[in-house]
Length: 149
Image 1 (cartoon, rainbow, N blue to C red):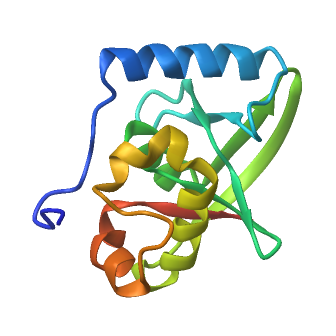
Image 2: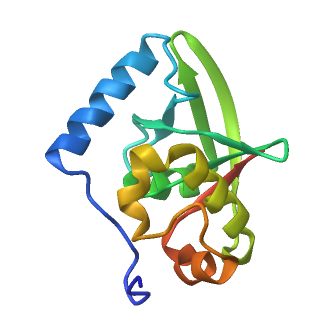
């Protein structure tokens, strides 16, 4: 169970940071790994574009971004900016986002686990795609989810 007194944040390990750079480089070169994109968001204090590889997810025709490591820098930045860009090679898609409330998250988190558990499952504290809504709802506050508008 997640400690709800402090925002949940799991810093990338050295191996995780290396993997992110590799996926970001491949995606930045125009090769999507199972739908991956590079998210570019302006820094909330510097205004400088910051980039990170992400796995956009479509559920019932609506696209989402899920933050499996919690309150990361891109989450903090996109909350302030209200959007950013999804990039694949030279293609850039401007986006705006709306953060979901905790009650709206379970079906999105479950679909995210079905699609991406092989890559990010270790960040979901034992949850699987078969977890029930109550199990997901219990940890949902620690997983920011954004609808791409």
